[in-house]
Image (cartoon, rainbow, N blue to C red; front, side):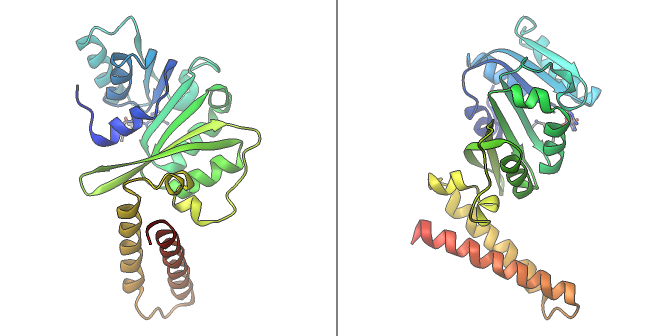
Amino acid sequence: MLLSPRLKAIADLVPPSRTIADIGTDHGHIPLYLIRQGRAEYAIAADISPGSLDKAVQLIQQYNMGHCMEARLGSGLSVIAPGEADTIIIAGMGGILIREILEEGEEAARSAHILILQPMIGQEELRRWLLNNGYSIVDEELAAEGDRIYEIIAAKPDKEARGYENEIYYDIGWKLVEKKHPLLKEWIQKKIRSLSEIVRNLGNAKTQSASERKHELMEKIRMYKEVYDSCFR
Ligand SMILES: C[S@@+](CC[C@H](N)C(=O)[O-])C[C@H]1O[C@@H](n2cnc3c(N)ncnc32)[C@H](O)[C@@H]1O
């Protein structure tokens, strides 16, 4: 089974694990892949939606994986006991929803060795929450699929974790800058283009809030350019 570049990049960040839990699994492709690769001994594929979970149930049956894969219906981390999964994957949701799932299932989240998180939006808020709530970010990945570049964050419970000194690293993951990720150049260029487009649309902002927003965005563009220049010039 071939994974899309986004799913493959998520799976590639998963270390050899005893039990992985894929929360919001939908199609179930990530847990199946990890089992077939021998990267996980056991996989729990969980989803809040019966319709979504049914796809994972079918997949488990189709590949005869009932002895090492299990589908569980329920919200967030309520489906696993603390300590049951050493790796937790939460992918394809908004950063705020991922944060809520980690908050509500705090015991299970903190007892895992690693969390592999793939927020579709709200990446900045998620990084900020992780670093200010006892998780360190140990790695980050980018994956290009279609015309989008997806961000994937690997985090670990860490009592010593603290926030970044430079605010821009909540937007541009520090780990991506540190390893000069091959897609980082294109990703920053895309960000600058889309922020510049919003600034252009704000035009000659008349209201105070529009004018403040324009200045905020221009400051952000300046910070993106600073990181770009420090990495690629
Ligand atoms: C867009 S799909 C992502 C599927 C897969 N993880 C991926 O990255 O391709 C989001 C899935 O998350 C599920 N979901 C949303 N909120 C959830 C929650 N609180 N707990 C468990 N699953 C949830 C949805 O039912 C849906 O199947």
